[in-house]
Length: 114
Image (cartoon, rainbow, N blue to C red; front, side):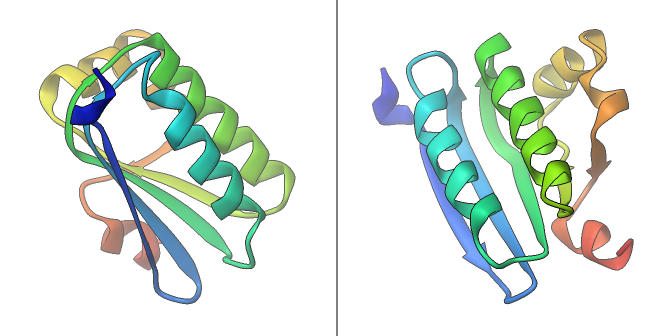
């Protein structure tokens, strides 16, 4: 059921923040992947994915984040993730993704680190 998934993009000129809410899984990951591809290819210097409103994420969602990070790095752009709820962070931690990506508690923390 993809009706529960939503992607919103905010752009402050330098950085785009992509907020995802609902369930990020096989049914919804294509929508996020499409938005990430567009955003990474745009003129912004950095991309932040905000997971705070995410209720669930499976391995497809993990893969989408990792691919977007690799694409951004390949283009010389910053890529960061705002930590999600405990169950989402647990998945990121158990799979080692948390160690590979740049995480913060708010988008502002990621901007300050630049």
